[in-house]
Length: 233
Length: 233
Image (cartoon, rainbow over the protein chains, first blue to last red):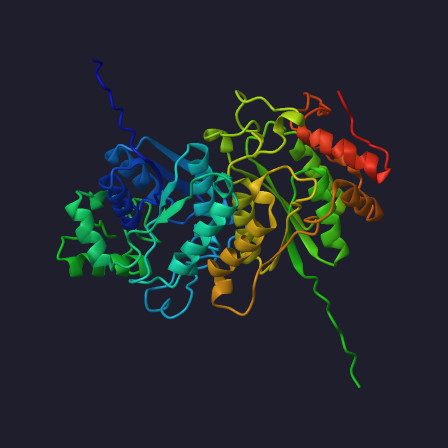
């Protein structure tokens, strides 16, 4: 009689990691579901580039298998307050009820496409993105309809079309409000002091407290009844 | 009576320009249709990186408004003979009847996503890509079904979703064979000596003559009855 050795391989997942609160929670959720995590961030010329330092810390704290920060200079064409210094970041009130000027053209389309490329190359079928449509920013690339359409497109434009597998785009935060996201993150041990959400931080990475992203985050901590560990200016 | 001044603004188009025969033809077609052209190439770690020198020459000869070569290092994950030197480029015979090892994971998905980002930022609604499904390489990301699904996705994940416009992904070469492409290019004055198709060129940019891409190109010139201006090793 021999000894039976069972090697359990974790399923891989690529996680889009911005350095913000949502994607840090998304990474923790993927890990709690047993995925071996590959984190992907973008140096796209964002005004709040300090979020990349946060992404590095979050990835290291989570012990991801690999973290890639992909350069992708979207300042070459601008079109957003986050990628063009001539466009000011509005306050939360100024950006209500329309697609705000902080929307970056086709950002999640690009991020998901690159995530699909990496995933396909390493035989990974699962991609996590922390989009959310409750505390809604007004960004078209955070909507469920777009995500499901992207998933279908990725499954048509890759080996998935001819082989016996499919990509799944996981959006665990899609229907949660910010307080629910923060509560789940706390339950999973996310250290939110490592994350940064502000669109307009100072040179020390301290948050402005008034941009739309700061406003959403502040309210989230309040509603969750969790101490806000954000460093404000 | 006053003098009526009519300023005709050309419609803009973003053209994916690899440096090969198909995309050079695609650019000429877009120009012949009256578009003001913005060319987009990718330095993605391709084995045949010399195609970027060709892309530069083609863009300059066509007098495009702007040419961006975007770095996007797909060697970080490989998964293709074009982005991993440990995988050999097969001959045309070896790569028939399956998705060949020269397929680059999700390449056209990434290229179209970035083209959409640039297009959206400059109020451009038209994107041209030289995919082709007759002299068919077996690449899933060249199929019409993928392109139409991408178009739908881009229109859901950008301002197009909320505003009164839509992206159109133009694929003028989709149903032409290589000889038809070459004949149309010659009619439009494309200088094919500027283009390079080989997956495995030598250090002087001379084509191998035996890779699947060389085989398709050679046959195209023969069938079109046009002198093959390719420089072979």
